Length: 210
Ligand SMILES: [Ca+2]
Ligand SMILES: [Ca+2]
Image 1 (cartoon, rainbow, N blue to C red):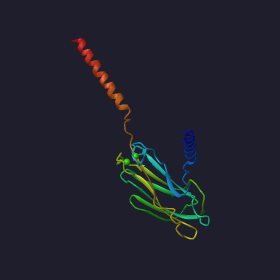
Image 2: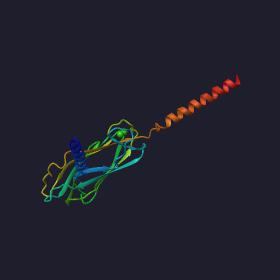
Image 3: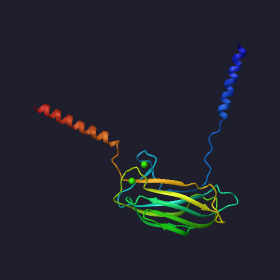
Image 4: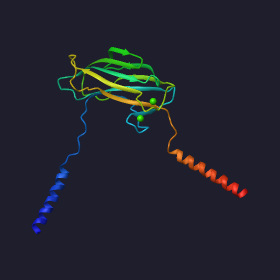
């Protein structure tokens, strides 16, 4: 009996050690990627981040490149990306490219899509490298539809030989919506409460007067 109790204790200790041995998940490795800022925040709770703006506001998005995760015998020399926006809500004002990817070899502006092919030299292990900036003016079509109003898509990255860097860029897309300010819902119960108190007060006054 005593022996089996000791066995149980040994089992419990073993289980505790096993639990402690499970490693915390590793942070994701840095990778070749394109992102933009202003990222927005979550205003309406859906998966698309939101930026609060008003009609007539000027809005800027900075395109940032990260060149980690490239093989040690490769460097990033050309990147190609696509920017898309809702033309009812955002009016295109201009685009700038920045060194070391400041040489634009191809650029195509359609009504609401800009594709850019930008050339630099021997980039690797860089983070937050600003490659472009796009400017918008917020238009009267501004609404809180929950649909994407601006997105970036990383199309390709080429190495120093003009070869596509394999499998590191697979249609990376980032999205954001622009929204106009709405009354804070938390204020509404307070307003209703004040209204009811006012009605009660008037009724009391009416009863007293009768
Ligand atoms: Ca949203
Ligand atoms: Ca919107």
